[in-house]
Length: 233
Image: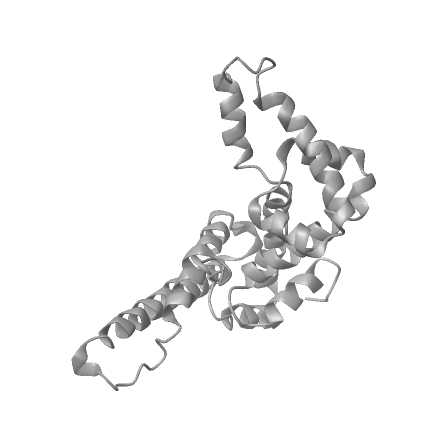
C-alpha cells in the first residue's frame, strides 16, 4: 500500500515492536490531547463547555499538571469547579444534598474529556489497521512481529474488526495473529509467574529465575494495559 496521511501514523506505531502497539497508539493520542487541552483549546469555547462538564480522570489531570502551563491548568480548573459546585451542593447549608447531586458526583468520577477523545480516535485508527492488514503484506509482517497485544486492547480490536476490509483467508490470518499475540503472551506470562513463585521454594534456592524476575510487572502491564506506577506507595 502506498503511504498516505492515514497509513503513515499506523506504520510508525507498528514499526516499533516493544510492548502493545495499541498502548503506544493510546500514549501518542494522550500526549497530543493533553498538549491541545492546555494549549490551543484554551481559546475554543466548544471544547471548554465539554471540559467544564466532564473534567478529567486522575491520570490525565496528572499529565496536564506535569506537562502543561500552570495558568492553563488553573483556568481549566476554575471554570470546571464553578460548574460542578453549582450541581453537587444544596443552596442552603442546612439542607442535605439530593440523590441527584450525589449521583452527579459519582458520575463525575467516570468522565474525562481526554479518555473520551482517545477512545474515539483509537477506533478511527483501528479502521486503518484492518485495511492495512487486509491489503499490505509488509504491514501484516509488522503486526505479527509485535511483542503482544494487551488484554484490554485485544478486546477492543476483536470487538471492532472490519470484516469487509479483508478477504476470508486474510481475516482468518488476522484472528490467528491477534490470538497468538494475546493468548500466546498470556500463556508465557503464566509460565513466568509460576516459575517465579517456585523460586521461593527452599529446594530451588540459588536456582535460575530465567525470564521470571520481572513477570509481576509484565503481568500487571498486560492485564491492566498500564505499567506499574512505582510512585505509588
